[in-house]
Image 1 (spheres, rainbow, N blue to C red):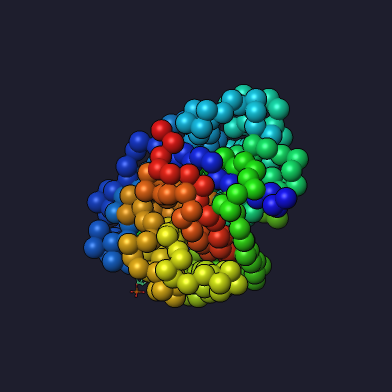
Image 2 (cartoon, helix red, strand yellow; image 1 turned 90 degrees about the vertical axis):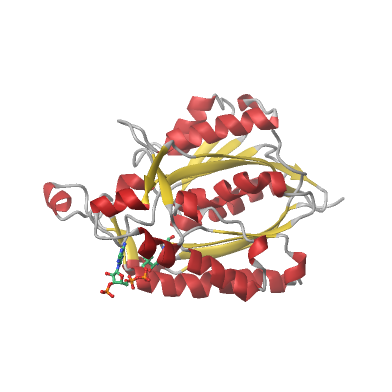
Length: 334
Ligand code: UT7
């Protein structure tokens, strides 16, 4: 009998309504549309407004839509993993809040944090629960309310990030589709270049940390850019090579949307033309764990059964990786 693999059988995204444009950002900090577009490719991003609304709001909407479009009842779900760097609270897990809100009464759930690579780390973890044969329906959520940890007086970070998320359903298959290979990497020394200084057990929130603005993303952009360009391209090329894939075999590159220049460099290294690259950075910016499921959702109608996809990401940690997936169905489920 063929080995059980995890196949993506549905995808749904969710972005909040409020659009924060480059023009509005230019009223907050010393920047302009031309600089932001040419250095990042971002035109606008979404912001989740409203009191006491956390990342779970994004995940709940995505999961509700996913259940509906795949004809799945919440009670059938075995497991929900939520990749996020901006959980509603330090505990309990945002995945538990999502699970409760959608009525996934038979599921266990947990969060996974790997910054911008979170969705890939969670997808890999989830696929292994399916491959054991014990779990039949697993949901992976990737969602972040990045606006909750961004300093809107810092022009080097506030232009990049936005809020949004998505979710995929994984089910077992013995067909020649599904998640075929994953390659994940971590280098903890990268923490120096991209981190949040306070709010964890090392530096709990205090008047001092608040005044020092230590509850915001700290990023040395140029250093992160250098690592991202090299490593995202490297890992994408490597996963193709070890699966004997050439550019013509790839239907789509699904890259983390951090910077258009990093995406272009990755596609170039893989030899993949621009027409095969999923792109929505101009509309949503960097939604951290949300970028890849949001891309899959927006391009779902163009996907065909048998399409080979390379998912690739780089982020804080440093974390990075690539996943080789053969898509399992034609067009949009709705
Ligand atoms: O997804 C998680 C991982 N994160 C990433 O992948 C992000 C990687 N890094 C980047 O995408 C880029 O480094 C940034 C978009 C963050 C910055 O672009 P850059 O081309 O690396 O700019 P830079 O930091 O080297 O700054 C160049 C200049 C500086 O001015 P001086 O010192 O040359 O006079 C900055 O002060 O651009 C200035 N600058 C800005 N100017 C207008 C920085 N931010 C802005 C801004 N508007 N928003």
